Length: 568
Image (cartoon, rainbow, N blue to C red; front, side, top):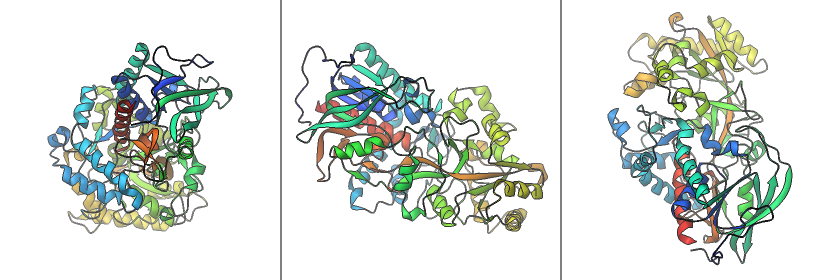
């Protein structure tokens, strides 16, 4: 329990700006974790000040942009598709993927155990009680492809929320708004926290800058002009400010040597305000930061032809059929197939000495297997539009995919192999792309389809994937030759490294209390979401199973809100 003296009873004190200067709790960051924590505090009848440096248009943070995938274990959706999952299998997959091997992994591994219990237990029922529903086809992300104890999901577990990221946010935004109407919540935008206030080692509030009003649309850069300052006090401060994915300099500074040399060029999968400022501020207040070198970035990024923020990239969510080549035209080794091992593929690509790679595919593959990350790239699922959704199982790629194929700078479309190779060379004239090697790889792969058996592990994986009804229905194209004219045209996509998530952060115990260097809680300070490595300072370990980032925000935000409410 916090040792901070209880706040004064009666009307709240106010600052010179008319804002309340005291509350039971202050939540720093209005993304998903912050909204969940605030909603829990409101449910407990606590007075909350919710702070965010961005304008109201960006309420919900990164979660709004998400595809809305959630990791669930042994769900009714899985059962209906013939998927036999279990808590034991999920634990085997999680720990085989995480690879916990440090002294600092004590609390992260405990958080992983607790999260697995949540995902196999009340998570789905809790979300459904909030009105959240799921698309009936469960996706199979991070397929692994090594051994049973290696990384990856043994079965499909990626449950897409009907309505994507905005639908996940909706019930928590509404609960916070109810808190505003009842007088329990004061939501203050354009408030940038610069310092956590402490007294005798106890966090007692925040101090920061008031930024100029901004009408910047969601995700777009907003002004950093300072027009005032503020100071607020509370018995608990919950940091839910996100990670470092929008700060390329910080990403490079923390880049792990095990992944090769940090890329010179990075696309950004998150807005620039995801800058990691609060991590250092929390550390100066006594919190311990761990696992900063663990991060989750994608090798399948493409430049957004209609960007919202600087270097805005979109991730291709690939099915397993595209031929993946490095910058020289050499095929990535097994099991580094599309959608199988994100960090394994990233590490291999960077160790070639180059920062880009290629997908080579057909129109038949792009129609069935290409999805794009982001709520805005999936208007059928986001808008709950059944007419648009029906087009996913009809001829033609989804509209946003076709738009990228037409307008995207990274796409080459050609009717013949020579024209495709010429287009690839035009996109990377200075890269050592061996066009003869590209042709050898394509023709060798196609010969393996002459029989129902093969030594090509990727073709075996494609055939195996189609045994799963969900993949056969909407995700994996039937095996065919890339040079089959009836499957064309041919397509090549130049892929870039795309920043996304921090897997380390503020170390926390199972009550989301921030821990100091001596492993004891920092009184009054809590952390949740990406700022806490989604719990404990890194519950994913080195790698993630996907669908676990939004779920980590939900779980850690709920724990932080409930723990803070019980302590104040």
